[in-house]
Length: 332
Image (cartoon, rainbow, N blue to C red):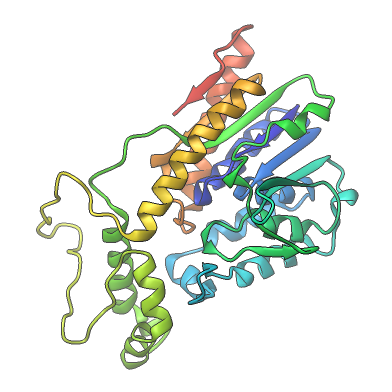
């Protein structure tokens, strides 16, 4: 079978669960394509190191992710992501796409030419780095004079590269399934809660003075403002109530930060492009992971997102085994 893995930030962890379900049932993956997080997960599987990465991802906490952040005040991206990529490179080792036992394609976007770029040869880590450059979040990557960014900009679910793969079954996994916006938990509130908890728990990282200094730096202020969060102030120690405390009244329409507005728009555009791709290259089976499964930057929630992907894949494969003509989409 051939597998196409879509873009969607941390929701891409669901791809791990899908692959776990497929391998547990004895499916042989003979071709794999991916955009953004789909390119990363697909490349790790093709290289035989997905289990190692999944174990590392499950160990991540919000505090660990804070240590891995590499903030930048440049307009190209809030994060450079090199620290995370260093971990991926250590897991992969020096491997090229040509050396992979499974045909693999990573999709990126050439920002200058306005075209999709398919990586089917060359260093695997280079292809992954180019494909995961989320606009406005991770800086673009330069390769051979081309400025490359997230493959999901033009091709969030890359089906076309699978046309050359000789497979008796094609499965597409979209992690941007239609879902209403959850008005109960807007991104800014969650971000502020994370930052407040980080300040309260800095004993394991920094003393209080150092924590205040870190959050009060211009770079930190610039990063937090991009995420729609206010910086912490010594004179105004306001926090989100803990569980069991008095709940704040939530307005009917969520207040979204500038970053969240951009990412919602990106999600909507990706969903529209995915529908167009599926009409041109319909898979034998489509698994859709709802957007409400996690926020795009919830990289500390690997365990539960992987479990969602596996559950949806099991549901899809059960139908495939029992129904000779299954519906084209299995949606959570």
